[in-house]
Length: 605
Image (cartoon, rainbow, N blue to C red; front, side, top):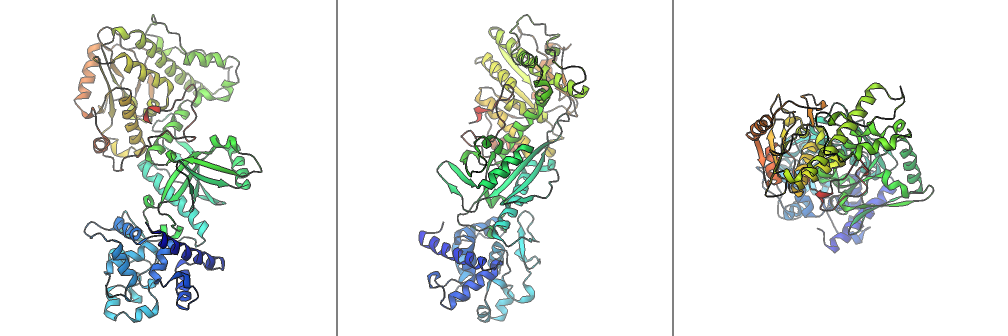
């Protein structure tokens, strides 16, 4: 980190650069050259006597240690790490006696998005021997030599994943540069989280100081299809941060614009804050997308209740809303569950006078221990829908969702009533094969069953959840799926229920199997076919032995079991991304609102 004295000089250089921009200069390298000429002419005595390389660094808001860290992140394994002293040598050569390496000069140029030769004034080049100019790539014909000796365009950006040089054409206006870089960085980041399910994203639309990005998230369930989300990307290069929140000021015009947009549909806000203090947008170009910004998320529709037309507003985004893989996966899971229940939220249903009683019959089924299990799963209250109001397909989906929800509440009632006879609860749960795993996290009926069954099978009784994953589909599932599978394991663990992850049977993996002990009957539930289509079971001819044999066979394909940590989990599912970095505090105003159908997985925080 820069010391206070160095930080003061950094700010002076940045202010001088901003003054030049206000005079019409846009190219950062040219701005740095003008500053050095003014320093040489004695017109800027408060800036000291920095070299052109130092001015480029100070304009970027970086210390020598910051630059070294950026280079080390980009290096190939066979390269030795560099430090701040190595950066100092490169900055002061040829005036100082110490000589940098050609690699160091190339990498230093890559940080600033320029060529090695362009970092030197003509008088400096005159002081460097011709042989050394060739060695260091300072001859005009070699300007295009990029990192690791790979030839590339004269103005390059290192592709940190492949090690190649790519041309990067970005606007020079600081605000537009920050906005466009933020949008591209967001798309790259989310693309990593969506993996092979990432859909083509329309080009981001620049709107005032923000960009608008429209995402299509996978549902991993045919019935739901893709999930649309709109995100506004706002890059704040000089954020206001307190001990617990990021603050963003909106002008009256922005409040008006956002309120009008909310009339069309909801959207999220992603605020990007530079990873390095005092960094400038152009200096972040050469970094990997994971090293440019910290991100914070907000559901603007939940915050907008406090907006007033004609007045500005200060957004206060809590630090636990840090947008990581963990939070993004939870945002996806909450949106998924809302989409799952959308057939019950149709306005034509809600407008019916009998709808309130209908919904109550779903959510609060009678606690009837004499229920006939051969028929309970098909029983849902009659929906108050006049003939022809809903299309047949929508009516069918609405009845299916209502029946599954009511059935799960009824099963919970039965488990509670049978608690004295329960000595074992082992369930094989095919929901983990698809996007349906999100129901464990955000469905209120699922939580009721999870809590009830974990309470009914307290020690010394035996309880276990067997969750299948598909070996054939493992590489095709996105990181958000695995992040939420890990969240499910954590939630069950905090409810006191161990989880066993197994490889699914390629033919029968989507079947429903459970064992509640010798004295309690099997409760039919749902099964999911190989295409992800759900079926609600209304009965079964399977015996207790059939269920036990199936579960025993599944256990023979165990991947992980018991008190595993994330490292074991990541290895088991062949996940390449690091731990999803969940916050110990509950995020605010970013997950879908809770209601009588949706509940947040508060056990995670």
